[in-house]
Image (cartoon, rainbow, N blue to C red; front, side, top):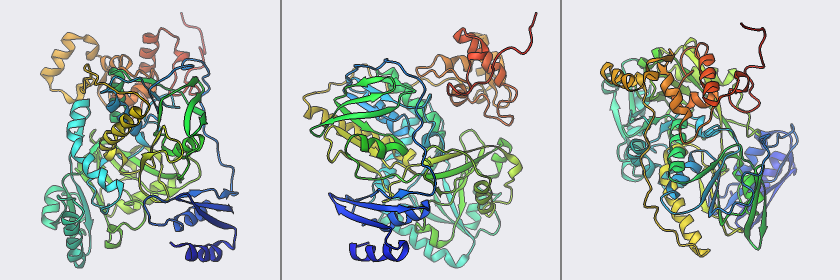
Length: 573
């Protein structure tokens, strides 16, 4: 929207309490307002449509206190004085994939993550779909990288030992008269936008593949290149491979401030000491604009967006075999900023239903609201009547990190020269991560050369990661052979997911060991089944305590504050 029209619109909607200034390829929004949705709307109206001009939200929200970033309680000097060539901020899929690509070079790479484990933000709280790009128009960074990233997934997951299923995606329509319009849309996607596998399938072909869908569906838009992966498993696998190849990972490490002189980051202060990096890569998710502010390079804003997913028991997995949703023609063309959720058959054979999309001013509020689940289920029951809320075994909420332009920000700092931003990475950020990491790698190498560093290849780089064996995926002969070699694999701890003591010990011996109940759960799925750890958690705790040589009272569910056992209640003999 141009300057004159925008100013008139803002006066009409906000009575002069919100205004803006255009400067230095930014549109800076100012004023104050007591409704967060109103602030988001004002900033969205301010988007210019020009790729290099970003909206910066400096409007003061007066409707409620805005929580500060949570910081780990840990305080030590473990990193004090370190001088890494590259400091990567953020242990989500962006940060770890970049770290892994940079480990191909003889560089001192330090990756810091403020949480006690990886993938605790959006990277571990999404549906795991590997998108085909059918809902993205040509010209955006999202669309550019989703086409590249989608093609890379088979090789990446094979190298990292992570399950991946190219299950395909169906978007169903219940009105026959829409078919010519959807066919035209599919042709545009194939011929203009490069999503070459897009086609329309008949009702008969659809029900041959997905017999349990609603009989009201008349035809569907189909992309066989769509797939699914476990997002936190992939994030952890990337990190383990990076660490095995020489990257230093520091968990429970928050960036608190930066010293910037003459347009360069001189030092970065964390709760574990001050480091002095040559270059910094900002992959901080919802806090990417905060990191940019510390670095004196804030030219964009993140407006957090919540999305809630439900996980259904594996018995519901038979109802849908791929990724399915139902849409109207208007929504196919990108109305809104979400597909409104869908149904996905996960790589572990559950069904995942969701997500929705709700704007929020709270970057770390992962609470799940009943209305979110109700909204998503009401919509997706139009795809199949087999969905039952009684089949839900758990649910989770993630907070996405979009800019107001709804596109990625992948560029060098504008005011701060030794900084690279990998920011505003929302859906389909999981899909695009392998391709984005390659480009960030090139940018980092080029920037290091500007500072007189000429990186050499790491001849010992190994792109392959040996995955932990999973008994549930083995036949009887394979199980017997594994148990013969190591009897620990013969002791089943988690009955729902058929996880053995051997697998839990493997998780504790991994390159990125997080010896907590949730850390084990995310690595081998102990506690992910129908009972959600009701039976196996005490045994998992005992195994962790024995491995660490500590009492049960020192074993945590997740963070240091997540105490499970406070002490003995009665004396034993």
